[in-house]
Image 1 (cartoon, rainbow, N blue to C red):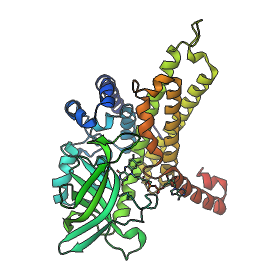
Image 2 (image 1 turned 45 degrees about the horizontal axis):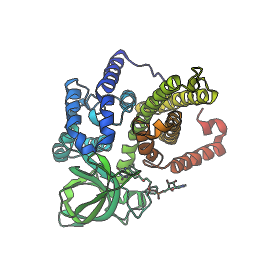
Image 3 (image 1 turned 135 degrees about the horizontal axis):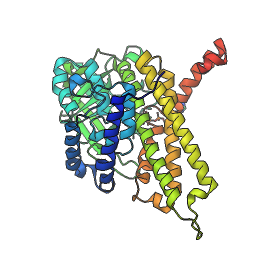
Image 4 (image 1 turned 30 degrees about the vertical axis):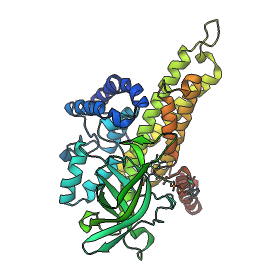
Length: 407
Ligand SMILES: Cc1cc2nc3c(=O)[nH]c(=O)nc-3n(C[C@H](O)[C@H](O)[C@H](O)COP(=O)(O)OP(=O)(O)OC[C@H]3O[C@@H](n4cnc5c(N)ncnc54)[C@H](O)[C@@H]3O)c2cc1C
């Protein structure tokens, strides 16, 4: 495999990094202290600049108005954008819209593409994805209580979802609901587009997460579907294919998340080194950087970031060259590896900043609050470890340690 960055890609990354440094990081103090909804006009102006630079929607196909980068290339972009919490939004590649765009692109009918996909890629509307339920374990997604029952030409949806990220202000949700209760477990659910102004679609609240309800794009919604009626033509893909399509959506999505988390690692690491080099710790002019324990944190963080980065690039390369199925376990590895590396690096950086680290005067406390969830969403650590361990043990039983380690 070859992770060499092409000349063209390096130019793109340099432009993005410069934009993040000059245009986005200076907005962060305002972003941290204001509601997202109040930041929308300022962010719209930055989005306009990104479009003018022809860097909009890096991961989306060219025919949709994106840059058409492959997964590995977009991974590098995601890393650069991840250094600030507003990067992906400003460049039009934020979750969950990015995943919904992929689904609509792959499975949407021409009418669905015209009505939902086009304005979504252009950034004119936003969307959310409603799978997780209040009363059912998200870790075992086949246990869904939300139903979509056929009535005439419609589906009538009933159910109670939560953690629909960015539901506040979204134009539509892609809802996972049971349409075929008698089919085998993995063929019971379908994805259905539900415009948020449909009667019976009720956004109950923005869930308070780590002390903050958020607003607009930066929020997580609880949604009650009460006899919510949509035409059957709003179904995405074949009936009963919801889980198959969700799986497709998750593979590349996890690479995007991991590379974004590596961007967070890079930024936290940068702040940690700066602080260690500057903070005086004794009257003779010694800084924190002279202390062995701080040096150990810095060396460990650098090594862990590099390991996590290489694993993620490798998984992206494998998806690009062999497909998501072949990379299933590599994707599980990075999902828990990188999430834990990120948490560790943010925590060390915060600790090096002492009391300052706990304030909102740096971005570290924001990262600390918001990124804890990385070990839970898109499959909790434990679920990924269990799935990978099962496969490793089976391969070991059949063919020994080399097969188990895939070496
Ligand atoms: C910030 C954030 C954003 C999210 N965004 C979305 C979204 O946009 N759309 C959406 O549909 N959902 C979203 N989710 C929901 C997320 O996907 C679920 O929270 C996740 O799948 C876990 O499901 P659960 O919360 O029901 O936990 P449960 O399934 O109840 O699991 C709880 C814990 O039990 C343990 N556990 C579970 N299964 C096993 C096992 N087999 N072996 C050992 N231990 C186990 C794990 O430690 C796990 O954390 C989001 C969640 C968060 C926190």
